[in-house]
Length: 207
Length: 204
Image (cartoon, rainbow over all chains, first blue to last red; front, side):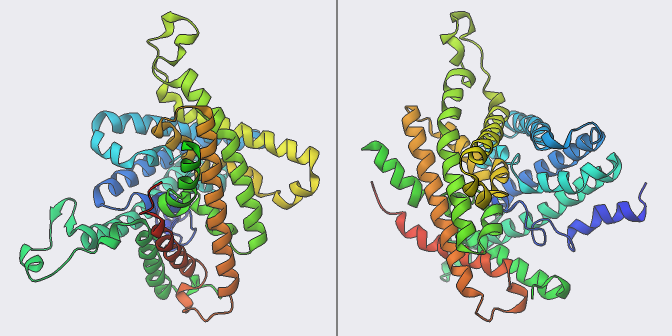
């Protein structure tokens, strides 16, 4: 079930081969949905689901896809799965699906998907592909949650919608940092995470 | 006049990169020098301007609730809007393929300089994102949609060329080792985003 190779497929993307920090894939949505924690978690779970199942499907049919049209085949598989996720969200969590607006649809063009399908699912059996999908999805979600946690905490003083900065702080002159809610600070937050991550993993630093 | 407003707005205020982060992956990958950045920017602008009216007409006359009523009154209750994503991406992927073939046939020199970037545009989120925003904004005519596409494309071009110019210069600076490469690029983009936010207050 979990041979050494499968374990690598599952756990490497969490830190050493993280899709966002190291492979630099899927940046658009990482930045756009992280104003608060709840949409970030929903987005992370959606990406894990789409990534794992599209990896499995492509892996099953990998020997029958002609290489010339593989991109269109991949797009169609991914788009079909994304539509399922989108309809599911609209049905069960309408508020969050409104907040995420176009970004659920944009999972289709999330580079993590194309990247993993091309790099892994086309050359591997379904089970390792499934684990690779879960691993990369989790790696993506971890970054999403970290960024969203800091942006929500510093920007609105809440975590998951609950007030965590006590009222007396505000009475003594503490202010929420409105800049954290604005788009540019997402980039700078990710840059800080990259900074910490690369300072700890020296082999990732660029010369 | 309304079109002109929309054009300026989509370039500066609703900039694809700084306001919505669309097309970040290729934005970070090709911004190493100005020349390639310019090439990809032009290709993205072109694709946005071409696919936007097609997707608009598709959305208007095929996909929206009751859109098929021009075909026969009995189809007025059909709502195909859930197929939107798959249709848009199909249009974009096939338009990319088509443009690639046309450019290869008529201008081999342009093809050689854009070469690898053209097929990549199919998965550039700026194009699909543009189509989805167009659907949300509910434009009045295909003309307005085209103007929006063109403006968003030029905004993207502006951003990517600006970043490439800064990155060419920063190659000579002494950046802390863990930040070299991607890290500093993120920070520059963030600072450029803050600069672009100064356009926010402008009422057109």
